[in-house]
Image (cartoon, rainbow, N blue to C red; front, side):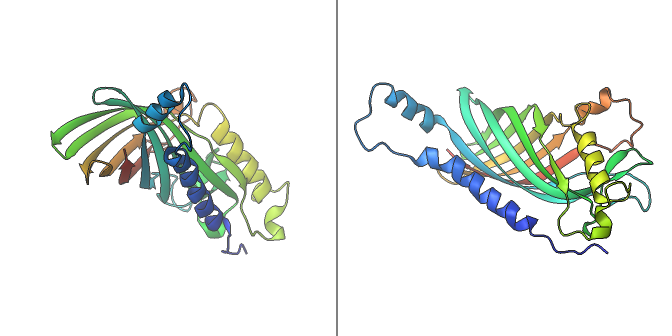
Length: 249
């Protein structure tokens, strides 16, 4: 029997706080002396950057059939983004969203499938790194619609799930965690299954001149389906996100 306890949520929370600190500290730094040549330009660049934080519900639809894995994972996904204005209402943005869940490998379906925590084999920590163009359409003085899109990569770390019993760790058992974890890792990193271009939209409200609060909607496209030749259900690989976005400008 696989026990339900796992310390990994605490690790995930710590990484989230650390990411926020890494993004925030450079923007708050102030020089202690008169700026040297070139420092004024660097200061101007930093002042042009905007920092955003996201709280997203990541929805991963699945259609694996009855008694095969977990139905429709809905995962909390914290994230952050760094934006820079390009021209007018157009800007470029670098974003990072994180999530974690448990997967197994179905050797009959020949693909990785999400599974319940009590049946876990592989722990997947996902980091979705995106680079997007963002356009804003003003509705009124303190409200605007945001439209954006670009390439993204899901850089998944796949390891054996925590707190398993010895019976779950038999190396040459297809139902064991080691073989399933290796198969999940090979599946996710093989044939470009980490490529996920996306489109999004949102509605932002200006709290004041420095802060924006908004809603956020995104869809990620499973481009790998175009070349892997797999016979997959229609919903397999698609992802949807809905949440909020808080921006410091």
